[in-house]
Image (cartoon, rainbow, N blue to C red; front, top):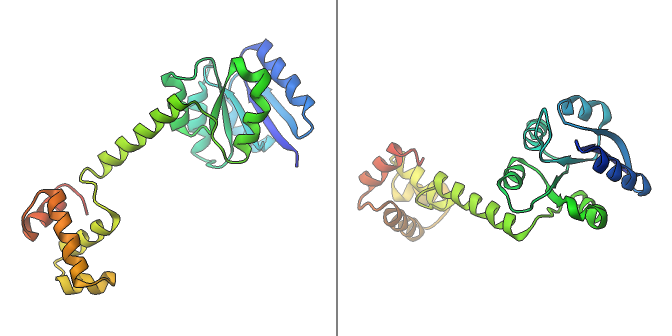
Amino acid sequence: MVHSVLLYEDNPLLSESIQSMLRLNQELTLTGAFPNPVEITSHLSSLTPDLLIMDIDMPGMTGIEAVTKVRSTNKEIPILMLTVFDDNQHVFDAICAGASGYLLKKHIATRLFSAIEKVLEGGAPMSPSIARMVLASMQQKAFVENPYQLTPKEKQVLTSLSKGNSYKMIAAEHEISLDTVRSHIRKIYEKLQVHSQTEAVRKAINERLV
């Protein structure tokens, strides 16, 4: 299967070099090369590429801004970023915006096709340092959204409790035993640092946990 590619790179010499490489690969077809992604929305619509290769730093619109724009309407298309450094904030921001992975410019000659193959297969080429940054960001976001680290089942039980349901009603609603309900509620009290149903419900409502 031949995959169509759009390239966004503002360095003329590097752009031409990448274009030459892509033309030599029979499994890829270059459908467009541009110095910036300002018109990326119309490009996606008219050229319908299978893959985007994009520099992070470009005039007019950065690669990060372009990724954000693409992802607002297209969650699926692989986006491979090109960058000079592999451990800076720009790379991290690009990945968080929705980039599929990135390739260091110094490795283009030797690793371009393997990186393309990886993203087309659903992989995410990135260095361990950036992977750690992304993981730490995800963990921080999860903690902010769920500061008491309640499990999905504990949230369900707390929601039922907030509706004034009895232990028996909660057990029936979630098809669990009374002992399991009591166990969940004990853990909820511990995590919320409360000692009664009234306190738990008040905290849940005041802090929008349910």
